[in-house]
Length: 160
Image 1 (spheres, rainbow, N blue to C red):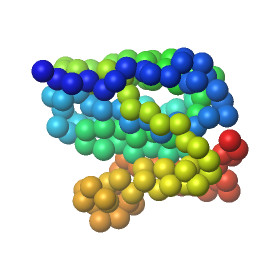
Image 2: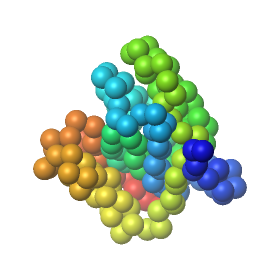
Image 3: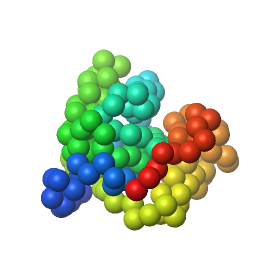
Image 4: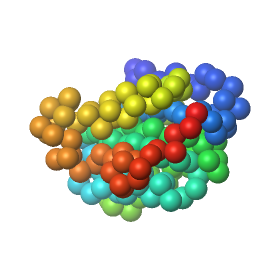
């Protein structure tokens, strides 16, 4: 029997607080050992579009073969609304690319960041993930990794 991640365990209001930043890990459905052709690109495109969508403020992201890391904070939507809508939307994108089986596991793993040092460590963890997993030698070789500083921005506007 498949063991799904624990359901959301904090009060919903926690996920609405704009001064909080969250590290989310969203797991692919167990039937997906790695993203089928074209599907990973669709998911990544969907993640990167969130930078300008106004629902969340995205600081870092990395799509791995069987999960996605996001470092973000709520902006126009709370994190739960955003995640539910985003999973549905990316599932539709995957179906449009020819994928027919489930895409995501229910729920998510989440952690609220404590301070600036925690923020910096988490960004580094996310962007280093492909190299640490030995998928590439250097992070720049992985097509699906991004952090706010990749856009040449002087700071992350990461006031907490």
